[in-house]
Length: 334
Image (cartoon, rainbow, N blue to C red; front, side, top):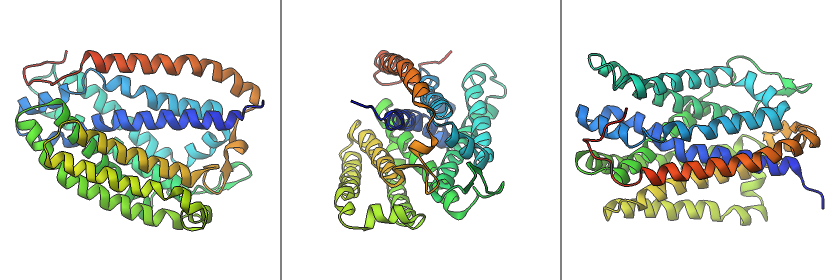
């Protein structure tokens, strides 16, 4: 039996990216919501909900980016020149955000500056991720196995729209995480914010979903041609189910349901994107098999991945188990 190694690796990288979205999404969302904290104590409590796990969450970003470089080098060589600007902006913003986690607790006289570094870094990093995603969805011109576009091709109304959509979405994840992990004033603010953010995100999902099929002919064939549309129809239906669960959970003052429903909205949106992309890794330009490294390289890397990924899953799960439960205002991160 022959194993389709490029397809296996595409599944592993897709899983790593999804893990990054559902884990780092809510802690970036905490940063986006940080200015909503009405007092220093509230902001301390918000940061403490993610302080023990935020750096572990970003492991998946490294795995996804490193996997793309090693497994699909041609795709990496095409995508990076097209998206240098938003990716560099994202990395710099993540640096500011990471430094703020440490310096905020030490620099008492200038704590407000690190509050803004944390909030600004989180918001800018999220927006840059969304812009990069939008630029990839709308397509990257390729000629002779190289990027054939200009420096500013990534900056379009559609990419700006996806950047804004991701900021709203991560803020919703952050709000539902705070509902799950806090009590008192922070939880009340988060629950109130989640209603508005949920409505805004659904609007954004609707607009982006309507625009995306018009970006490429094969996108249109996946979603609006029979019989393919019969197979993808469950995705928008399940989005409606998650939306209902989100607002019902908020109305019933559930703590866990809103968070799970918000994660469901992200997972389904991501699945819809994968359906649109397949079999391309760079839409309309490069398929998985055209961009993949030789099978010998993929086979060698797969052995390491099959050891590494379970280890990451175990220590991530253990970290969340150790730091389970509500975070009180009196808790401190050092």
